[in-house]
Length: 246
Image (cartoon, rainbow, N blue to C red; front, side, top):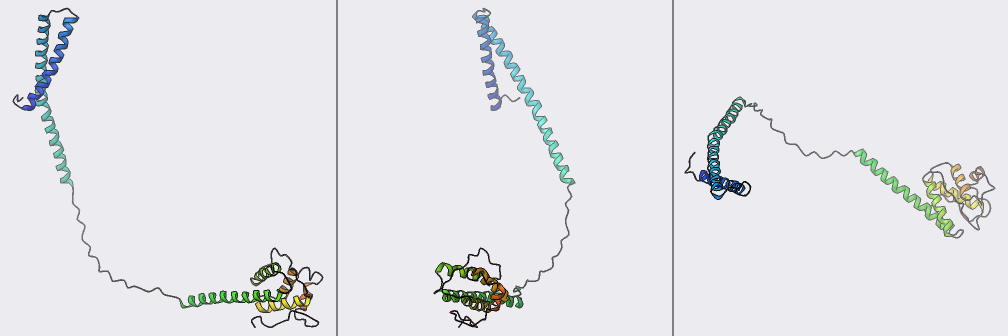
């Protein structure tokens, strides 16, 4: 142990301070509890201090001689293991594969099927045509029945025309009330609507009239209505016309 080393000197001073504090405690005990006089207590203090200091220095000697070799040996073992591990590592070199040059990808414009374009245009034209046909029928209905029905009955009638134009069965029908019209007027109106749409048989428009004008045609069966759609004898206010677009 190098006693000139500042670190060792500092350790000895710290240890001596602790031992002196412990010796003072024992000196106090010898005086207070066991009745020793000052001389005997001082002698006990010196003995404990000297013996403790000797043991402390011996302890430092053992630590500095035994511990460093252990650490050094442990360090060598670790270094040897690292060297062995590195020597056992085989570097695998994969053969370089030459990649073929990629051909430039041409910007291909999406192919447009001309037939699909034609079909889509036809569908759009058909939707527009049906809407225009329906608008003509609604306008004709409003103009024709304006003198013979109130707004509520005319609007309800137009709703039934819309359902008829789709070919669906009438639902939630409340009979339409009209005034100053005869059955032949209703037959002519039915013919004009059927001839305008041309989407079903005359039996269907006869049933439509029977349901919508249930009160006016309650005593007339649908077959009679169908037969009299084009009937022109007698007086009437609604004319049978070939087209509603004029």
